[in-house]
Structures are given as C-alpha cells and as structure tokens.
Image (cartoon, rainbow, N blue to C red; front, side):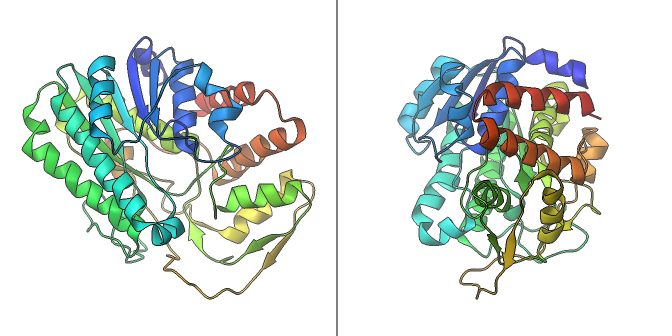
Length: 356
C-alpha cells in the first residue's frame, strides 16, 4: 500500500479546511508526496495554529474563501481542475454549535452542498472524499459500534448539521454524480482524533498541554467518558486510502466508510491523562463536578470492519503510541518553539514506516 502513495506525485489535490488541525496535516502530507496542493479556507481558525507554525501558506497554493460563497468556489474548481478533492472544512465544535447554530449549519451543511454543486459541474476526472463525522450517527450509545448503514441523526446542532450534510451528499450522488463517469465520491467518517497542532476549544489534549506548559492544573469534568482515541495521521491515512481505492474500483463510488480504532480500543479520559504523565514532567489535573449545560455523549464508537475488509485499512498506531506522538509534538513546541515543519514532517515519516 505504501507504494500506492506515489500516485499523488504531480497530481492536483484540493483540500478544503486546510488551515485547520486535520487539514494542515493532510496538506503537509500531500505536499511531501509531491502533489500540487491547493488549500481553501475562510481563515486561520486558532492562534497558535499548526498551519502557521509549519509556514504552510508559503509552501502550497492558498485561497482564503468561505465555502458558503458558491460563486468563488466554482471559479477555484474550474481553474484548478483537481484530480482529487478532500472536503474537511467545517465548524467542528459541539459546544460552539449551540452558541452559533446558523454558522454551524451554513458551514457544515450549505458548505457541503456547495462542494457537491462544484463537483457536479466539473468536466475533468476527479476523486472526491467528503469527510463528515462519527457524530453523523444518531447517538444511541451502541456498544457494538456504529456501522455505515446505521441511522443518521443528531441531538445537537453540530451532529445534525453533519447528518444533514450526509443526506445532501447521498442525494447529489444518486441524482447527479452517479451518472457522471468522470467523478467518483466517497464519504469518510472518523471520530475523536488527537495529535500535535490542535488548539481547538474544549479539547482534552490541547487543554492539557496549554495548562501543563504553564505548570497549571487542567480541569477535567468527565474523567470516565470513553472515546476511541485515534491519532490524526491514522484518520488521514484512511481518507487517503479511500481515495486510492476509489480510483481503482468504481464499485466503491458513493459508499461511506468508518475510520476508527479497533472496537476494543475505547479508553477513558483518565487513561489518556495517566499515559501523558509518562512523557510530560509536571502533570496536574483536578476533577470537577459540572452540571451539563448541553448534551454530551458518554460513549462514541465506530465499527471500521468495512474499511478493514475492503480497503485493507486499520490504525497503525497503538493507543500508547497515539498519546506519545501527540505529547511529543507539544513537548517539542513548548520547549523549542521552532522547526515545527521539520518535526511534523518527521512524525509523518515515522508514521509512514508503521503503516500496516
């Protein structure tokens, strides 16, 4: 499978949300594979940001455009003529979705609609991977893990915006794209990813790293919540793998795939803290009781057997390695605050050696 990554050399790869956590890592990976990368984002979402720390703006092509602006989006698609599209742009925070539901639906639902409209009008051959979320599923806290044909839905604005986007994707595929021989599309659902360069609000690893770098306690409100902890590179490799298989096999056109850790790899927040303590000198936390003001799920798990069976994909990093990769990145940043491009590239190279 590693040798298949060579197919991206000199290919035109368009990535939406390239200034975000996942998008900046994916853009860097494709840049290092020799692809001609074009990134589309509204802005740089956090300060600091992985995008700025690795100076990505000067290493790939950039368009700072809101994906709700269909007119500008169409111009970019028509002029760039992408061989591959990876749609990651989104408002991805559950708590923020309660505060700003219109922004969330505009970005996640209307933005995805615009991407589908652009794909519909493309004349060149193109493989598109549309990234949604594990929260697209109606959260019934199923212990067996959600399968690709389970019911979609959402108890919060973020989740329902992603489920709504999935309905749009399916409608556009069946109504337009299935008839177009030049376009193939796949849906990728991943969950709780961690890794260096994430500074989003209300995220365990960024909150821990920021606090511990200042020798402060991090406040933990849900120590027993379980998550399928997954490194960002494992999820991104799933997206890349899906695009490779879509190119090879037209029968996968229009299908959805889950990309999560094995079903026995759910760990508690406390498990993450205890592992992080091994690679960080001073670790402090305080468990607090807080009345839940918004709905938060306690159990999220994806069944990724379809991806394992058809795409031959599975996570290459263990839970211990996942936490280690993440904490090492932040440790390098807070201790040295330089060469983050080289360090991020090094982590991609180390990960590539572990690909199963």
